[in-house]
Length: 115
Ligand SMILES: [Zn+2]
Image (cartoon, rainbow, N blue to C red; front, side):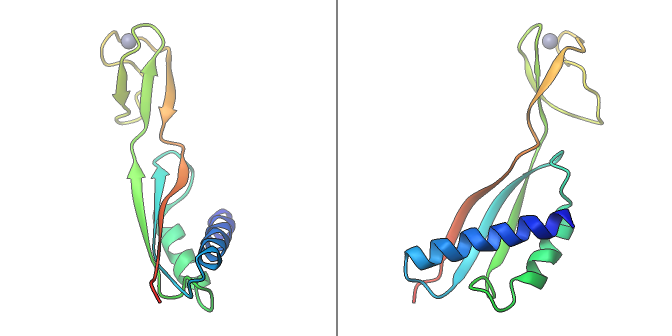
């Protein structure tokens, strides 16, 4: 499962971070998830809750920030938020738009629990 491998590497990153700071636990993890990243937020959340057991993330909360899909028009360079899957520039109606945001998945912050 796609979400599982994401969670596994996420927990891995957290454990390395905790070790670096000689911490025994992670308190909170905040990630940014693009709406077109192909990852289901609720699946990610439930995978995290399952796999965090017996790791340093056991007591941690996963906070998922959903990021809108941002389009940039190649004709007039207008940037807009994708609505209803219309890949069209709202300003000049051009269909020459490219996605400049919305597929990301990255860690915003890892909060380490103070001993
Ligand atoms: Zn345009």
